[in-house]
Image (cartoon, rainbow, N blue to C red; front, side, top):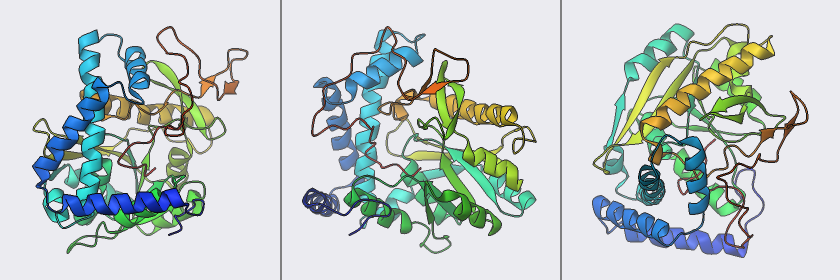
Length: 351
């Protein structure tokens, strides 16, 4: 049961695996729409009871969307937790016999744009995406349609969660007409990503989370400095492959999804040699992510501490992993065995 890149499983991990297996069997006997309705109710109840992460989400929304009214931000907060709960329910359904019916609910827009970009580059392409909508479901649908995805992901701390997510992702693309997904653990992704690009695969990275200072560049995200991983954009420049976007959203009916595949981003040449050009290109990718989130902010994982790493105030280029406090941020929450400093989205973290 050893997860990829994770610590050995514990007794708690085994209990968690058993619980997920039981919930999966339960979902086998529940219609998809009913499961989503129950999940939505749980998400709303979570906010009503001021559950873990609600205060963090409220503070993040206040700083990122000051132009919204209090009522609008409260609606977005509810939507965040409804989306997370429904995403978890869909992951359980995706493991069972309703998988095909669930995949059929994902509409893909712009496939011809992606194919045109791949044809012009010999197949290899870097896809930039975000934890928006149900990204796991969207990846499964893309693989089922024949897009050869190589997903760069961050191994989970829990061996149980890591193994279950890996098993779920590796099922993708095994449908008739599909192409099996390849998983590339972050931390040793460089060579594997180069090989994937050489084979004409689409390397998928999620660039919407906080990066350590040695890994990223500071760019502006919702009006604030955000440390963002730059290696994927640098690799694309070095290999001369195009960078495209892909974003998933749940449609207003709450039942279906749309995966929108964009064309090549207008990035500046020379990023492999000039750090400032690289930073500007990372900014362009981040701008695309912010624009996608602003369409429906309630579908992004505001539970994540995106702005945790901030520039130091004691030097123009110095960086720190300590967040810069703001007037609307709450004090740190007290530690709890059930709550981790690191945000965890129910649908996992494939980046």
